[in-house]
Length: 338
Image 1 (cartoon, one colour):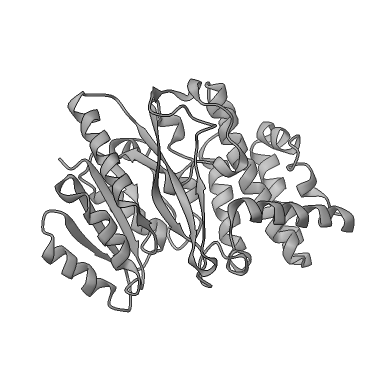
Image 2 (cartoon, rainbow, N blue to C red):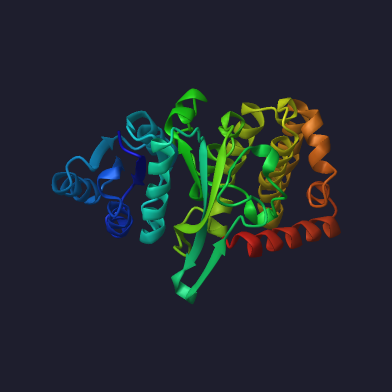
């Protein structure tokens, strides 16, 4: 059995997918690379097939109709044979030395028959256009180099949410929690980093910068203009997260608080984008989103609206909306969307 399955969702990725694939190939026979061609119209499929031909037993091509990023991740989960599972977007890449460290660690986990549900590593925002990179580490939030449970975690800053780029799940766990991401929808990585968490009983944090997250393409899903254009998909994902788990039913207090905080971040980002655009149509969408949360989980609604940034996000006056725009810019600086 392979130690790690790496799924690389590709849609018209011919220009940059080589870098992602080559960075994963460093793992050699311990790794399985699943290149998921999601209905591309360029030479993505040909490139994927060439890698499959040149690296049999390591690279596999999955060719499917276009269904979006979530659909490609679903295909990876369904076809993965590795003990652990990682998503690598086609415009991102792994730090090669860090990948070898991860595989050496997972080899010890298997050899020693250790139960481990989730491995966490740092990720790095890479913005070549301004020669800038920013490391997101979890040193202050998670004890490093220790097998832990949720009881051992500390305080997560707003910039330290666990995201797809920082997480390696046990493959079996993703199947047990019946994770299925919606098709033709952006921002589904938030569901991926949220829904499986109650199934995670054992964690480990390696303080290494494994994942390199490219920021800066004009068509990128986290570009401000693109996010505003796709705000209905952001709202859709937020509602799915509201519906898929009731954090109030989670017994572990630290995990419960973390998941409420994550949901609060989703509500705040959606609200800020809607108010920043400013049309009556989008202001109504913001009101409807908060009403949806209130109608479906009043306890979580009350918890979020008591938070420092949660309450102002419902302000309707002109001065109140200015506060929300300020909050949006604050988040923009934290998360480096643009």
